Image (tube, rainbow, N blue to C red; front, side, top):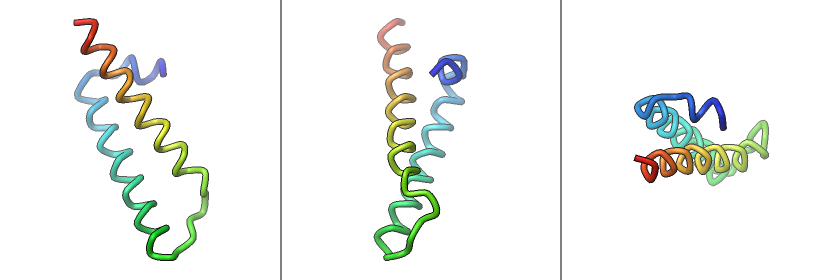
Length: 63
C-alpha cells in the first residue's frame, strides 16, 4: 500500500490498467479450458486492483 501511495496519479492509473489487462488474460486462459501456473494469482490481482482503486479514491476525497 505504501508503494501505491507514493506513486503519482498517472503511475497509479497505468499500473491499474496493467493489472486489469493481466487479470483479463488470466481469466481468458481459464475460460478457454487451460490451466494457469498460479491459481492464486487471480485473487492477488483482484486484491491489488482494489487496493489501487482505494488509494485513488482516498486521494480524490482528500483534495
